[in-house]
Length: 278
Length: 123
Image 1 (tube, rainbow over the protein chains, first blue to last red):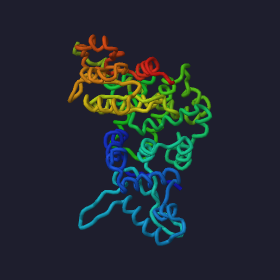
Image 2: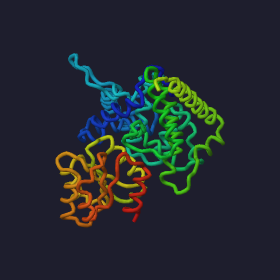
Image 3: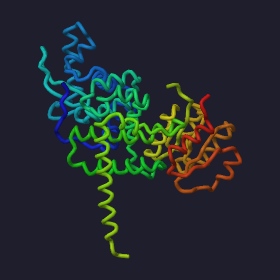
Image 4: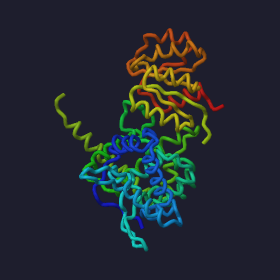
């Protein structure tokens, strides 16, 4: 069972400006094709497509029947995940970059830490690993507890909006719409909602945990349904409305977000109205 | 998804470059990046992209001179300029040599889509 981590987590802005660029530099397209970076990408792929695993289980995927090789590989994987301290010097593992985290302790025959992708790990894998649609479906099944409002409703969403579900990969690329100097947004509804999303992301900076990050990713996903499909398709389809009509849980959740935005802007407007300089 | 073709985007501002690339990939193109004029010329020669988005103000060689260099060897090169500084200094000359358009930053994703549909539609 996947358990949401309650400890403090970085923000989506940290993902865009720190985690993703550093992961790309260390393991991604910007890294030399070293064995180290290839092994890290293999681990990420396994965690994405198989779900949470112990290092023993990861090694067993590679060498199903060779105990000696499993033991060696397991040590190597653990070192790549948690890093290594040698003569007082710590070399960072993937966990230090908040891409992978320890989910729980396995109580199976070979007990050990159970590793899984963090929210940022999911986003990074969507960006870096060139998944096929089927692989993204698998990732969604494995991480439905982590992103219940998206992956937990994956098949329903696919039936409503088709391939537009895969647009979540664009968040993996860091497309947060946080800089209007770069991309002009014509769609007014989308502009207001994504702008408030940006403000909300910053308001929460001090108190993120996995649930809040998951909530923000979900908000991004549903808000951008007002935007991406209409860039491609000729007819202006309101996919968001279509989904909210069918799913009352999502409707309540998204309506609360809109009400929150309305209250926020009303309060800001009152402040502006009260300015009596002119 | 089958690629619609290859586009080269040249801009020294990494944020602009990344965002533009993300949208063009979303529209179904393979995208190559360059961060200065000289790199643009060498990547153009290597990949011969079907369309180029070229920033006017770039290090090593500015966008206009980059265009003139490419145009010497590839007179049919399809190039669209992008500018954040309303730099139209050599636009008339570039246009006379078949530059396609000059757009001002920030631009919208809709504008990118309109330009790619117009100048580099799916084969």
